[in-house]
Length: 86
Image 1: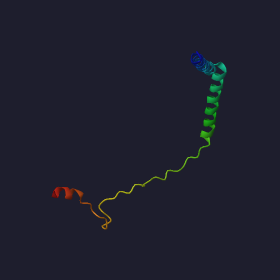
Image 2: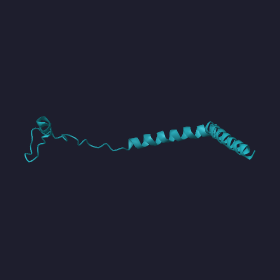
Image 3: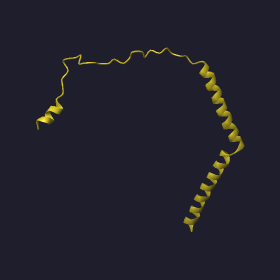
Image 4: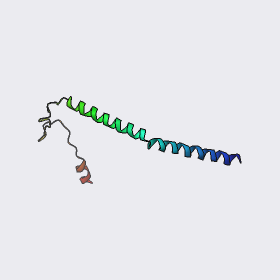
């Protein structure tokens, strides 16, 4: 008997929790406040966008292409030659 009452109370609290959360979420006050906050964020973005500094592009010729082997001290790997010998 006690177990059924306890389970009923759990279900009762869960139901009311969901009910009040949904009620608050869809209330007019919450919708107005969320709309106002979105508008204020848009205003802040537009004002800060005007104050941005545009940096000069300094990425010209940043990639160096390596043609033939410039460094003769590098060790050549002969992995494929080891496989061909077997």
